[in-house]
Image (cartoon, rainbow, N blue to C red; front, top):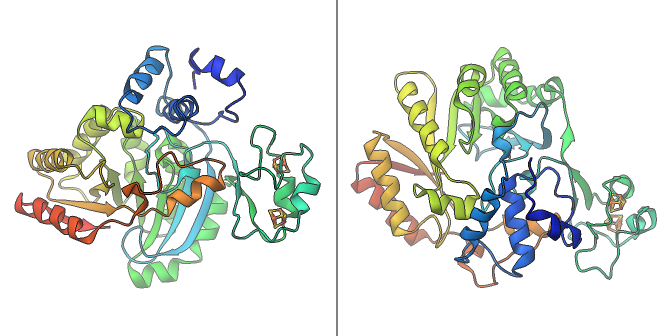
Length: 372
Ligand code: SF4
Ligand code: SF4
């Protein structure tokens, strides 16, 4: 990552730490939140701030090649991430910075310390053991993340697993070993494995090797992606080993995409069209998905532009994901604060009436929309 000169004076203020491993998009957002307290991307001037960062030469993770991912978690039995019963492998690291990300702990490519207050039994063992004196009950965030050096000693001693490390190094074989034991459930339910994140396509060679191993075990594979990748290595190294692709299309308007996801969407849409045309007659299913975020992606303009885009490219089926505010509680666990107020609609589960209205709108345009 190229850190822009604009960042340096801010970092010197020591307001902001442990930024290694964030995408340029995420870094820009964090700096903005430091500068304009309580602000978020809905602020009109945010876009011009983001432009300034670009002028200063920030580069995105998507332009880089990463060898090995850290794995956040492997969920054994999921019913929500594709057909049948599935195991979900969550990769850490994403080139984008979507405001409503369901897994904010997956944005940073580096490991993070996670503190779950609900699990904490106040034994004080972590405070005793921390060599940096970074943990204190006087701190509303509990951990001073500027002082923390990620030595993991608190994780080792915590008896209730309130302190955990997010992001573990795992080999392809270690992941396969954990997943393959669920194969009888996959076979009976028509399920398989789902690679999610984070963004698995950031790690082309690793993802390719992992998918290939799953195919060798006769396991159905599904890849979730935000679509910001180089299409050539994707086609040659990943595509041959995938059965289904869930492909996120959040906005059609590039400026809206930049405002809420940190980057423009030109490449995402181009990649989608290319893959859609290529896969029309093939055995790989490509399914676009749009998260319905109140007041953001569900605007009349965006819904209209999405239907127009799908109709123009003869996409017949797509998925709508409804807002699930559970992710907001995750922010504090990684030492971040929500930048919207308590009555913001983003804090609510998606309204059923609105959901059906949008589904009907798509249906009238001849599109089949399913809720994921
Ligand atoms: S990871 Fe190490 S430095 Fe950080 S809070 Fe825990 S014990 Fe302290
Ligand atoms: S060691 Fe774990 S349970 Fe004990 S105070 Fe620290 S976080 Fe809480």
